[in-house]
Length: 295
Ligand code: NAP
Image (tube, rainbow, N blue to C red; front, side, top):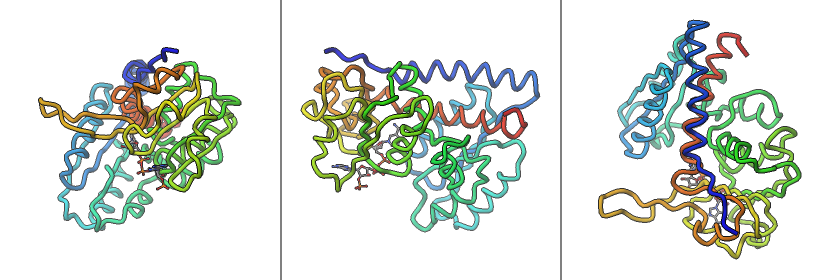
């Protein structure tokens, strides 16, 4: 079976077009310009490029965006004061602190200091708790993107056996939770695997939908999946450098082998990756509407 390739690039593009219209309408009808601030501490090149991409994406949609870069030695108290400043800034609807933070800063202290109504990353315990309870909240961007990919690709989740490999707080745990919620893109029977799982291949072979968020290149091989599985590969692993100095990326799934058995599969790059930033934009627009009591 030749798998249908789920293009996150195309799905993200469609959602951005929708958001552009929504932002224009908000601005013209209500005089609201959604605002996002990204805060980066230090000069990690990967973080710099993520932050730049987020700001570029915001600009393209008509979202007001501000970027603050702080010295790597910035004390935690200064960062907390900055977060507080933006908590009280009516022009800013979404606050994103780029992770990871330098070791001397307690990540939880910073994330918990963000006003939950401006927590567009969906990492604040208030939003995590509401997500688990199935209440309206900001969903974390990567799992939110996976839901959109499944829905817009017509993958049926109701009653499906979903196997998630990886239990991180930002991907594995939230996507497992979302898929068992009683609503669209949910109602699945979910298994969550990790390094202590016995016979992971046996679990994976039962999956109608397999979601890999592990960080180990090509770990999921063709012999570990059943025919017709839908595969979402979250992994982004640098496995080398091209002659032009560009990173060569691989997912957590052996794409070439698994695509021969899957009904559909996301590629790396061009699968989940483009969705993550797009869902950040969607959350920022949602935050602006909430602040204006429009939802
Ligand atoms: P993480 O925090 O490192 O968590 C990895 C998870 O995988 C852990 O739960 C770990 O189990 C499990 N694991 C690792 N090796 C395993 C193995 N051999 N067998 C079974 N389970 C194993 O990773 P993450 O932040 O979720 O990211 C996962 C991958 O997704 C990375 O490649 C990352 O770059 C990528 N990612 C992509 C996006 C995107 O937008 N495309 C966003 C976020 C992450 P234990 O808990 O037992 O240690």
